[in-house]
Amino acid sequence: MKNALSLCAAIFLVMLLDLPTNSISAAQPNSARPFSLPFNEASGSATWMFEQFFGNTTEAYNFGKYWYAAGQGLHFGMDFEARCGTTVVAIADGVVDKIDNPTFGALPHTIVIKHEALGYVSVYGHLRDRPTLLPGTPVRRGDPIAVTGDPDYNCESRPHLHLEIRSLDYRVAYNPAMLINADWDMLYSLHQPEATAFAKELRRPNRWQRITDQPEVQFNGDAINRFAETFPPAYRFQAPALTLPVAKAPVINVDAPLAMRRLTMPGCCTQPFWSVDSKSVLYLDADAERDTSIVRSITASGTATIVEDAPPALTSPNGEYEVRRIGNTTTLIHLLDGKRFPLITRGANPQFSPNSSKLLWHVRPADDIPGEIAPRTEIWVADVPTGDANLIRVQSGGSVRWLDDDRILIGESEVRSQRVQLSILTLSTGEIKPLIKNDFMRSLSVSPGGRYLLYALILQDAPDRNGLYLLETQPGAVPQKLPFFGGWRWRDSTSLIYIPFGEAQMSLVEFNIETGAQHPLSLPKFQTISIAVADWEISPDGRHIVYVDARDGAIWLLTLPLREFF
Image (tube, rainbow, N blue to C red):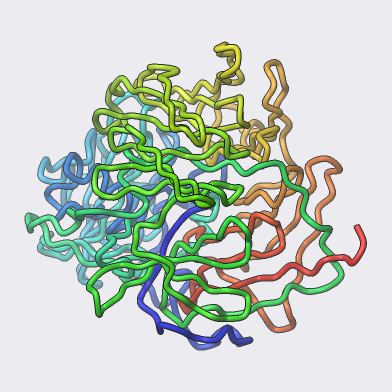
C-alpha cells in the first residue's frame, strides 16, 4: 500500500465515463517522435529492462547531489538496465560528434551523435569500451555504435546505459520519453508500488508526477528538487514495505467484465492508495487556500472529503492504531482510546506487522549510495501498543520487511555487486537462517501472511533462468518458475493479478499459485486500460483495483465481478 495525491475539485461524484479517445500521452507509441530506442532487440528479462525516467525521479531526489549536481539535481537522461557488452545502436541518423569527452561524465566511456536535421544531439554513457567510430563518421538509425558497461568499472555493480537527448549547444537536456517512439508505461510495468517513479514534493504534490510533465534541464543551473519534505520520504527514512495479513478474496466471475469508474477529474492525481478497510481510495492533493498538502478520500459512493494534512499517518492493518510523525517526533496512537506512546526512531518511519502486534524500522545513519560501501544500519522492533523497542540486528545497509508477526525478511547486498542474500530472522528464537541468494533480483514482494515470495530474475548468465519465481519462505524451499512474465500485485495469500509484459495493449490476468490456473479479466465493451508508470493497487479485500490512467491522468476504479457462491 502506498500514499499520494493532486489538485482537483473539492468534491465530485464518481461517474461512469468512457476513456477519452483523442488524448495523447508518452505512454502511447507515436510515429511522429523522431527517435527510436537505443537497442535493436525488444525489451525483456534476457535482453534489457527500462530502469529510470528523465527528470524528477525518486533516485534523483535521493542521490542527485552525488550524481546529478550539474543537471539541477534532476536525472537528465534515461537509464536502461543491460548486461555489459549489450549492443547499443544510434537512435536516429546523424554524425558522430565526440568520443569520451570528459565534460559528459558517464564513465567509463561515452559517444555523442549530432542530429543536425532534427536539432538535437544524443549522448550514450557508461559504455564498456571506447567506441571505435571516429568523430565525423555518419551513422544511420539502428547502426551499432557501442556496447553497454558499468559506471563502477566491474560489470557487476550497476551495468546500464545512460541516454541523453540535448540541444545542439549541449546546454539543455530534453525528456527522451517525449522524443522516442516507445510504450514507456509498459516498459516500466514490472515495478512494485514502493518503486515510485517520481518524487512527490509535499508542498506541490502534483508537480512533475507524470512522464509528460518533466522540466527541461538547464545545465549548471541551480538545483530545483531540494524539497523540504517528500512522499514517500527519502530512502534512508522510508518504512519497510507493507505485508498484509493472511487473506482470502472472493472468487472472480471470469465470464463477466470488470466495472470501470473514473474517480477524479482528468489530470488530477498520482499514487492513490487504499484505506485499510478497503472502503475508500486515498491520495495526496494540494490545498491552495492553506498553501499545503492534504489527504483526500473518495468513497464508493463518489464523495470526496479531506481526511488530514499530509503526510498521511500510517494505519495498522487492523485499523486500531496509527503512527503519526510531526516534525522529529514519532508517536504510536491507539485510536480506540487515544492513548499515545512515543517512539524513538531517529527519523526512520516504522511499519506495522501483518497482525498489528509489532512495529519494525530500519535506522540508516547516512545515504546508502549504490556502488559504494553501505553504512552500518540498525534494525529495531517495538511492541504494540506499549512502544517498547529492542535493537535486534546491525548490518551493512540492506533491507528489511515483515513476513509475519514473528519473522522478518532480511536482504543484504554484496559490495559493488547485484548479488543479494535473503535470510529469515525469527524474533521468538533470535535465529537467522539463509533463504536464497540471487543476482539481478527485482520487484520482490511478499504474499499476505508471508508464506510466499515472488520476484523477477533478469539478465541471468543462463537465459532460461530469467523469469518470475515463487518461493515458499521456509529454509530449503525450491523456487518455482512461473509460466508468465509481467508486473503483478497480490490479490490475497494465494492469488495475484498481473499485466503481461510487452503486449501492444495492457491487459489483466488472474493467476492462482496453488492450482496454476490463469484467467484473463475482461473489460467492458469498447474499453481499454493504460496504467501510468506501474501506479496501481489492489484493495486489501481483493475486490477492487485503483490505478492512474496514462491517457487522461485521472484515478480510475476497477471492480472485479464476483461469483455469488464460493
